[in-house]
Length: 354
Image (tube, rainbow, N blue to C red; front, side):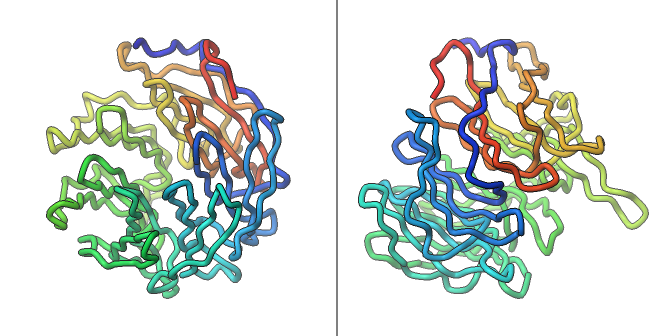
C-alpha cells in the first residue's frame, strides 16, 4: 500500500487534560487510551488514571493509582495495566507494583520489585512482562532483568544485561529482545545488546554510532532500529549540540547502515515525538537551537528517500508522551515552559478520526 503524501496528514486538537502533565505513561487496551500518573506543574508525582472517551471527546477519571508516581513503566497483561517503579514523592525511586483491571475497574497491589527503581523499560511476551534495568536510590544504573508472572504474582531473575543502564529502548522481535542505548548517571551510553529468550543468553551488537540523548527511537515495519536526532554530548571544551542525524541498524545484516546511505532530518532536534504512521517515520516538536520549543513536523518518504514538512503541531512542546492507535499518532501533555495539557492527534485525512 502506498504511503500517504505529506498534504494528507492533518492535526486535530482533542479534549485537553484536566491539568498540565509531563512524564506520564500511556497505554492502550482494546483500542482505548489510558493515561497514568505524571508530574504536575509543581513537579509533584500524581496518582491520576484517566481514560479518553472519543465518543464524547472527554477524559474520564478512573480510580486513582494507590501510589502517586511519574515515569512509571506500564505493560498490558490480559486487559490489565501493570504499573512498575517510577519516581514517587521526594523524587525517590519506587519499588511498588500495582495492577489495574480495566474490566473490573479496580486496583490491586502486587509483588514489589526487589528494590526501588526508576527508568525501567518493559515489554510483554507470552503473557509475561520483562523489565530491564533502571536506576536505584543510589543513582547508579542497574543491569537487572526481571520477569513477571501475573498469575503467580512473582518476579523471577533472568541473566542480567551486559551493560547496566536505565531509560533504554527495547524492542521485541520473535524470541529476541533488543536493548539499545540508555543512560548511566545522566550520561548516555552506546551499548546495544540482544537477549535470546530461548537460550536465555545475551549477545553484544555493534554499538550506537555516537552518544546522543533525547533521541527519537523507532523500530520500523521491517524490524530495523532507527535512531533519530538527539543531543550530542560535548566534551570538556565543547558545548552539547542538537543533531539531525539518522542512524539505522539492520538486524538481518547485523550492522549499522553507512551514514552516506541514510537521509538526515531537515531540522536538528531532541526530546521530540517520534512514531511510524502509515509507513512513514514522523517527528514532531521538541527542542532545537531556537530559543523556544518547536512546532515543526516532518515525515520521511521511503520511495522518494527524503524528509517532507507536514502541517505543524497545534501546540508546540517537548517531552510529550505519545502512542499510536489505529494508525493515528496521539501526542499528550509535555512541556512548553510549563507542563502542557494539550492532546492532539495526527491522522491521514482519508480516514475517519477518533
